[in-house]
Image 1 (cartoon, rainbow, N blue to C red):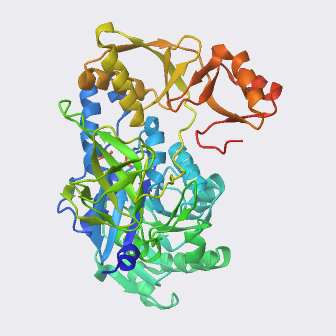
Image 2 (image 1 turned 90 degrees about the vertical axis):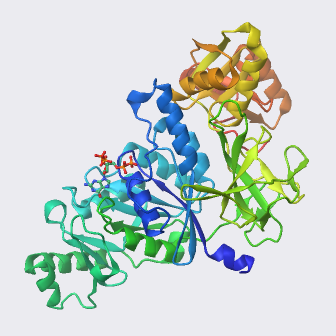
Length: 529
Ligand code: G4P
């Protein structure tokens, strides 16, 4: 197969959903269709529920699961699908954001009874920032839910997206009869519990056809006819181009647990979902078909065995062909590296691979050489953009609880923050270390992992902060004067950049008003002025 054919047959995506909408269930059904797993129940949920936050065994167990489910590769009808897992717990929102930098499209699940939920909203914002194409799957149609027209309106209004229904439910809950595929003009009837097969689909070219009445009864047939008329009048025709440019989102209805509507989703997905896309760097656009290999690290996972401090760096291949044992350039370090056992993920199996192509995710064993966002190339000096850190919102001072193990504590903090568990700032005036996170759970994770992996202990002390933000200014002297004036509220991040630690929204606003030439940034990636 040529590289172009390899690129064309790849689809890399993630499923986003508010917890409990059915992400684990849908993932499992997709893997069953792909033949990647044989039995239901094989994919464990990686949900970390609120009540388990202080249960460290639970955190470790979840970490184990999340290695296994980070990337689930499978083949379906000749297409190589890479499904990337995103953590459902909102404390891991930043992980999810980073994972979404490595996908080319997403499937967004909505519970038909609950509609748009808080996490759905946040995750959709991330997709919007990156113009990621979204397919909507409205799940749990076997349960009593909202009226489908109301649901579409709610989704369009709340998420500010344009929908294009491609399938339409016939009733809902106890009387749910099935879905009509508006795209293929076929009807699929629902038998609760039974596996959906291709034979269940009945082609109905003309909705006026009397067979429809025989199949679902006259009342439901008439409702479907008038619904379809309304849909055709109310929604423009679906256009694949518009979807690939993230301007419209196709919608499907189904029930993941009953395996209903899943095959239909998958068949449409492989047809319309975008093939691997290029990515932007600080010097140029990289396209998948570019000859030379390039890729970036979007996730780092520590080994679960505390005796081995190696980690797995997850690399998304952007262009060219990755080959085992070939020398590649680690741009940030300026070093050449080769990888003797790069790993590909096929469902729950890990295999060493000799080569991988754009769209693929490979795991590289790493002994602390990588940071999130690092770029590998064949020598070209460039860095992929778009994996910024966000201004954290929760802060704590780190206090060394075992002075004899200071070195271990520093190393642990350095490495755990490289992994992206939290951000580390050093205060300017007294050199105290401050950890910043987006979720409360991260502090516990850090404390626990410092102990188990680095034999170091730390306590946290309260620090009252509202936000940490980066700054830039055309006039360097003005910036320096501000940093001097606010020395007590200044820190440096791990890259040595100055960070303003605002105590309150008011303090931030005052700083902004008094210093109109200084720009305050809430993500770490910004153009220097
Ligand atoms: P998540 O990963 O998005 O958090 O959701 P998950 O798949 O774990 O599903 C959450 C619950 O919703 C599960 O029930 C699951 O069985 C159920 N579910 C998923 N799809 C459907 C569907 O199409 N219809 C109905 N009626 N239920 C669905 P649970 O009771 O929390 O767990 P379990 O004991 O069934 O695993």
